[in-house]
Image 1 (tube, protein in one colour):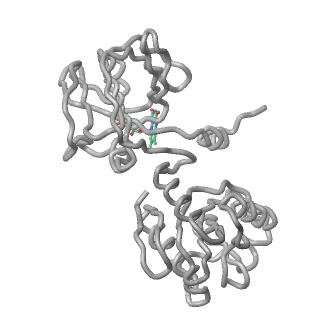
Image 2 (cartoon, helix red, strand yellow; image 1 turned 30 degrees about the vertical axis):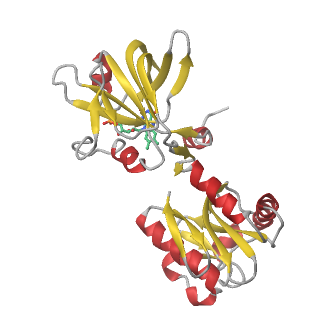
Image 3 (cartoon, helix red, strand yellow; image 1 turned 135 degrees about the vertical axis):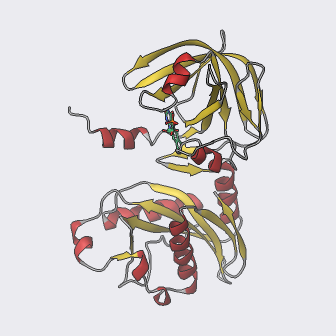
Length: 305
Ligand SMILES: Cc1cc2nc3c(=O)[nH]c(=O)nc-3n(C[C@H](O)[C@H](O)[C@H](O)COP(=O)(O)O)c2cc1C
């Protein structure tokens, strides 16, 4: 079978991971260096070994090829900016970052979930990555919950559990989906609603009903992260909204008006509840950062993810 690299990357991305920043120092200049990695794995308890992979084309490849050791910083839920910074070509990734040096002189970032200070046990190239195996010389773990990553998005496990608890507290539950396909949103009933379930007794039933609804529309793509949780005013119906990044849509949707570019959505056609969900979605999409709304239709807080 011919392997399509894009499809392979997408399939591998369904494996949920945490996010780490792997740090070291340039052996000559001693300048601190680091890159974001989710290929981290625990390898052995006795001896204590961990593993992480670095792409052969990475700028830092020659540094890690020669370094005597490295530290793995497991990022906590509020550190997604740090993850983005250590994955981007910024001049000084350590600027304005609180960090200190480990006993092995590797940079340790403050307020992480855990860190592991390692000497190199061995390193070798496999395919297009260098496998770096570290022997743990020192480590620390904290109470900070970890940052999660799956299918190209960060998630915050604690926040999502909190959202599920809030929605499950009392009353019926409805699940809805903001379905995005290449910069357009899927709108139903001539652009006045979005796919949603009937009110159900439990969150699981509501999600299953929503899945059936999406299946019947021919929408493929995972039900992504939990997007918004609100109580619909007075009706004792809690709502949970998900984002679906549709991998494909039926051919017919491309011809009729069901896929609406975000800038063309007529928000006045929606009930006030769905309008709130959609307006926030479009706003946060423009900013590239999404949150979960907790509260009622009138008041609430957005917890950034
Ligand atoms: C969540 C996330 C996980 C990543 N995991 C890895 C990884 O395991 N190995 C890797 O080589 N690059 C990974 N990257 C990409 C690198 O962080 C990125 O290419 C970085 O720019 C490499 O730095 P450099 O080119 O300055 O060496 C990841 C990026 C993100 C956002």
